[in-house]
Image 1 (tube, protein in one colour):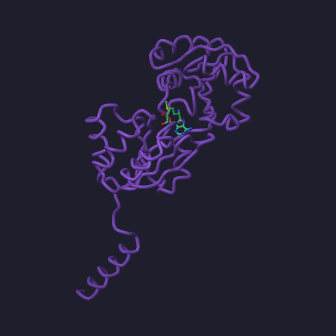
Image 2: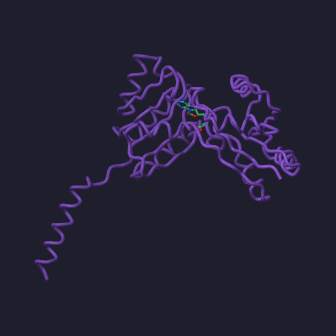
Image 3: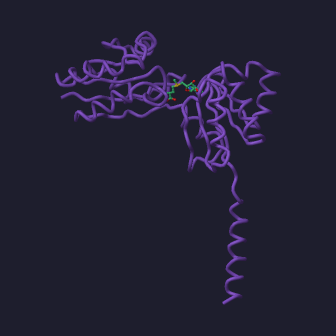
Length: 247
Ligand code: SAM
């Protein structure tokens, strides 16, 4: 039987496509793409013209059977999305779940992902973080989601579009006040920018320079701070001394 390759593609800079990804895309019998027209441009850039079918949110379940038949015939299939890693706020979960459950080999070909790209350069803690994809589009739902971050100590990460970035910053300011926010904008592209400040400060910045509100965003929010680590150590010693004195 054939294998399903889950292939990450660039999030802006075409040079980020790995040689292994290019090799796989050149060898498979079929490329299942979120938008075949969009991905056709990437294929032309690579000098490839593979057979393609669309797999998007609205047809993913029905495409599983088509892909299954191709794999049974011995054809290898690559799954890609418009940008970055499939399944990460992108289609592919149903395809991977069903084809793996049916016993086919599913092979990840790792590469760009906006979430990891943003986190690795933001300067916020990365040992624990929570990723939320896109927040609800409506204000009440969005604020309820942000409310749940109030007492969590871990870094919170979500994706945001230029249409809603200001509304989201306004909600972050309203719910979390002075909490530190880092925005990764247009990552790997010409106008890549990291903005760092409170949500209110970032909003003010966007008002004075509207270009800062354009493009694609990864929003990262610092966790609620617990006691500083060295303070905790001092407290532990004090507690130990007190216990020893008692004994
Ligand atoms: N699958 C993709 C990945 O691996 O990151 C994410 C796809 S999701 C539909 C698109 C969102 O990802 C954008 O709205 C933005 O929040 C984020 N994103 C994608 N590319 C980006 C970039 N170059 N810079 C900043 N954010 C980006």
